[in-house]
Image (cartoon, rainbow, N blue to C red; front, side, top):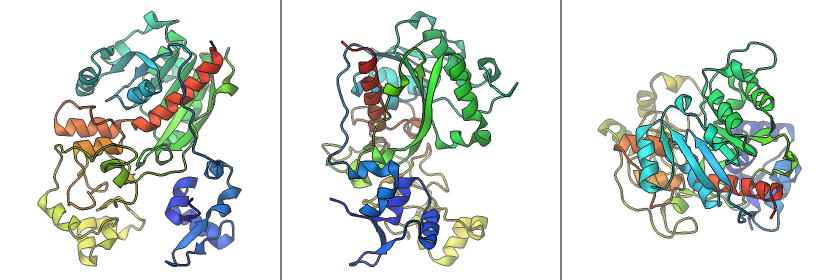
Length: 408
């Protein structure tokens, strides 16, 4: 049983920076101790009892809420991408009636892997879902974060015209599901000083949905070996008891890059070989000097200055630059382009970006889920996806809620 947590681990658990923890240490809110053997600064598990959101660390066993649906529960997914969310919901027992996506290669990926899925390749603005009214229980979508025009203090559906959230809300209004779920980046909560999320809540309220307080999820606590954060916006139709919905509960175990790429609990074999990008020689020469788990500050100072340019003098950690991931930590958040500067995710042993199948493993896609298009198209699809294991946990929460709403 784990009793000691590093500063980095506690920062992840609490969604705060290491600098915040150091400040808490100085003012006595949470004081780090010295680990006897290594002399590293750590926290004892009992010190974390003061944080209500960490009560899962003290549960007697891991959270397992997976259960079978009492009947077929049907979903529509908008902005479906390469299928990360759809696979997870499928694994939770939810049946997908239709998926809408305008990117051609993402649609080809969906069709190739699930020929029976109803994939609608078109701009959502041009698609009517009115035929699904009364047939769908769930509408999901990862709409982009866009600013609204504010016509008044209380934002209405028409004020959001021209945004993709408007299209999401319009489909919810057309189909009248029991529950709608939007997912987005954590920046949504602070976008336009919070006005954007306030507008979304106002619009869903107007069309008949109670919105559960949006929440940031760190997917490393949901069987995903990656430090990826997502926001969930959950709307429950107002004629239903929204108090019966519960967000997925976190797991105590955090999986690492080794768990992603090697045979173990997450996958029953080592990662398959596949195509992948390469670094240009100039970048490879620099990254060859970075140790496992290191980044640009581990380079000789003159090389730091040359590689970082003006950023060298700006301060801040910039820990994603010239970063070589360690086997013993989760990956940093994957991007859509694995070789771009400032977001390097270098393999621990070889000086190269992660391959397509390594990318997919880190996002917890099954090995038999193949991707269409060029290598760059495939990286983009995987980098934009919702991690499958996290999506399954969300799906299990939906099934648990709908089983209560619609018992046998």
